[in-house]
Every structure is written in structure tokens, then in C-alpha cells.
Amino acid sequence: MLFPAVHKLAAIQKEFARIIPNLPDAHQAGSPAQVIEACLKMLYWREHQNLAFIEKQEATLAATLNDAVVLLNNDGRVSAALVQPFEQLRKALLHHNEERCLSAREEQWRQNLVTLEQALVAVAAADEVSEATRHSLAGIMGRWEAKDLQEHMNTPDRMEESDTSATDIDTDQWQSYLRERFSEADLIVTEFKSLSGGFGKQTILFSASGKALDGDYVIRRDYTSDGLENDCHTVDKEYAVIRAVHASGFPAPDALWLDTDHPQLPGGDFIVMRRSPGETGGTVFSSHQAVSEKLVDTLALACAQLHSLPPLTSLGNLTSSICLKSWQNSTQEVVHEYIDEWYRMYLSSDHTPSPALACLYGWLLDNIPQVDGNPVLLHGDIGFQNMLLVKGDLSCLVDWEFVHVGDPAEDLAYIKNTVGHLLDWDRFMTSYTRESGFDIDEKRLRYFQIWGQVRNATAANIMSTLFARGEAEELKLAVLPFTYISQFIDAAQQLIEQYEH
Image: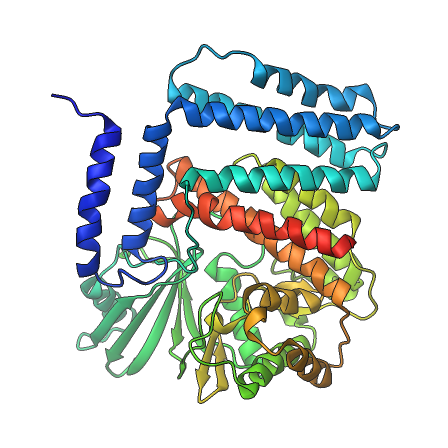
């Protein structure tokens, strides 16, 4: 007897709920248990709603497109040719669809989003569309897409961290690799443990006892699938930056070697670093301890020290955003090139069409702050989750994959987006300004808060699309759009409304 999938999924959820308390890290945000639970929930919701859910999506988008058509028609300068694709898509969505196969309807839905994104890209590039109209269109599309993604989870829960506990190399393989590398047959690996943490890299702690290596170390490793192509998202580029920053005297990791040729080890390339003392200060969205005045000052000082480093011209033309030209151009030029590069990378990459992102990039490129001063080196992901602390003092700032040259306000805005609500923000800004000499106003800060949300939504979109295409195996990527991306888009839209008022 065949059971409907929706019944089997409901039973699986029930049984899994009984197992969860016995699983390691079951209550940790982003643990394997929570990721599996979220995926089961999405599968159940898809089977339970079946075509009714996608029909609701079509009707909601049709109503949204009607608002977009009215808006564009009210702008006296917009040509009929620009409005026509929106109107045609709206009519197509309202047309009775005889296709009863869910997967076929989902493919049609994707094609509709492709059409909509292309129409919005054309609007963003058209001089005839006023800035006010583009901004209003971004609001319409942002609100619709955030809500649409959230409804895939029915009652979405916030996931604050992610986990990558699986690894395709083990203690014996790593010990054999080290013995061969250092020609030391007696070297012993005494600890080998994969850590929870972000979406971009795998982090493994190991300890070794021998002549060549004796102590505690960290492996930072690329996943095998290609992800983001800019910044320092591959370890070969990250390694070069870490070495240069560490040599300048800033508390970056002590990177020992980079390996891009390791036939005896399956998987991605990796860096090996000495393990710095201390514990992480918190998660992306919280702190592991009360945020004291000392901790606020520590975070401000770390930002100020980093932004005060001299140009690292020794890196040459490492990436498009860390190159000799980037140190010479104005801050405004560097920011424009950087955001435009992200936009072009998004459009040229395999991605899930996002009408909201198409509009948001238009807004960002319209509103780049005009500032004095030279660009500086930015960490791009600074916060308690990437700070190792010893008695409240910074021991090391880790995870440099988003490093680039730009406006110092960008790093501060990232902090405000993530843990700003936990800090005495006035004290943080006062400490930062005193130590760095940079005076950053609220509007400039808010602009980069918006950019931070858009950047994160873009990265999550591209990475989750890899999973959808079968080119990445990390299960956590499957829940990115319905937990994080919806939050990023919604937050960006709210910040734009605050910025403009």
C-alpha cells in the first residue's frame, strides 16, 4: 500500500522530534539536527499545500505586478516598452494554468522570475525612469519577495548560525599527510575536530606532537564546490592577506602554509595556522558574555587599528577589490566599483532570480555616499563571532574571506546590523572615532547597513543555488533562502525607508 508523501513526512517529523534530544548539539542554532528539522518542515509544507501554494504565489505576484504597472505608468517619462513585460507577466499569471504537475509548475515559476528580473534590470538601467520611481519599485518588490520566501516555512524560525560538522578527511588521513609533508614518521595527531561555523569554509582544529609540529593548529579549507568568485573566498587569496596583515603587526592568524596540491587528501585547498589563544566572543547575532564597556572598546579598537593600517601594496593585484588601483582611487570610486562588481557577478553567476535584489542594487548604485579621505582595508565580516578574546582583550581576528578595500563605514555598519543592539553604540562610535580619526555620520552608516544586507542576500542566493543545481552537498544551503535571505531583503527595505525619511 502506498502512503501519501505528506503522511510519511509528518510521521518522520514526529519521530525525529523524539530523537533530537539525544543528538549532539541538538539545541545549537544551525546544528545538523536543526537543519534536518527545517528541511523536513519545508518538504512537509510543500507536499501538504501542493499546487495550492504555488497558485497562491502566482496570485500574490500578479497583484504585486499590478502595483508595479500602476507605479511605472504614473511616472510620465516611462515608455510603454518598459512597462509591457510587467503587464504581460501579470496577465500570464492570472491565466488559468492547466499544468497539474508540481515540479513543472515550479519550473514555470522560476522562468517567470527570470522574466521579471530581466524587466527590472532594464528599468534600473533606463535613464527615463526617475530615481523616486526606482526606489518605490524596490519597496514593492522587496516586501513581496521577503514575504514569499518566509511563507515556504509556514511559521519561519530564525536560525542564527550554521554548522558544518561533516568532513571528508579523518584523523588517519591527516596524520599520514603531515608525516609525508615533514618526512617525520613518528609525528602524531592527537586531536582532529571539525567546527561549526559559516557557510564559506570548513574549519578543523587539530593538535600534533612531533619535531616539525608540536601544539595546537587550525585548518581552514575550501569546500569542493565553487561559490563566490570575488573578495578572498578561496584560501589562496585569503592566505596572502592574512600573512600581510599579520606581518603589519595586526592580530591576525599566524598562517604557516597553504596547500593547493594535495593528491592524497580529497576535497578543497586549505591553510594551516597556529591556533590563537582565547575563545570566540559570540555568534553573528549575539555575545557569549555581557557586553561590558571594555568589550565595546576592544571591538572599536580592533576596527580602528585595522582601518589605520598603511596600504598593503605588497599584495599587488590580488583581487579586483585589493589591487594597486584600489589604494589610489577615491573612496567613492572604490565603493562604486565594488558594489557594481557584486551586481555583475550576481547576474553572471548561476543564481535564483530575485526581483528584490535587482531593485536593491539599483538603489545602492544611485546613492553611494560622497566622502573625503582614502579607502582602507576592511575585514568585511567583523564581529564577536570572528574575535578570539582573552580576558576581554583581542587575541586574534579570524575569517578574512570578505576582506577588501573600501569605506571604513562598511565594517561599522556590519557590526551595527549584527550586534549593534547589544552595544552602547554611542560609546563604540566615540571610541572608534578617537582611535581612528574617522568621523562617520549616521546616514553614511545606514547606507552601508543596507549594503551589508544586500551583500549577504546575494552571497546566500548564489550559494543556495549551487545546492539546488546539485553542485554542492552541504544541506544547510537548502534552508538559506527561507531563513536568512528573507530576513536580509526585509531588513534592507526597512533601512531604505529609514534612510529616505
